[in-house]
Image 1 (tube, rainbow, N blue to C red):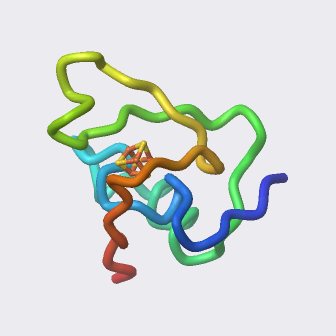
Image 2: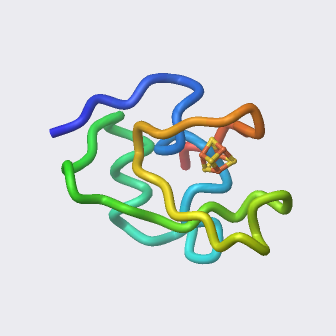
Image 3: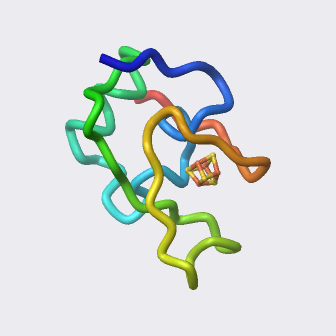
Length: 69
Ligand code: SF4
């Protein structure tokens, strides 16, 4: 199990941005924990053409805090 810190993809609004209500993503944001094999698309406009895939503990300077419902 991975522990996600502020500033990392699992807590970013662009992590799996094309399906933000996915229960798996909601649970990752709320708990700050994710399985070790989770991989999601990054929806940041500067990465969109690259179809970047990231783990919950990846990070970049485009981090935007996700709303936790
Ligand atoms: S790569 Fe950057 S913009 Fe994309 S989900 Fe991770 S922190 Fe957010």
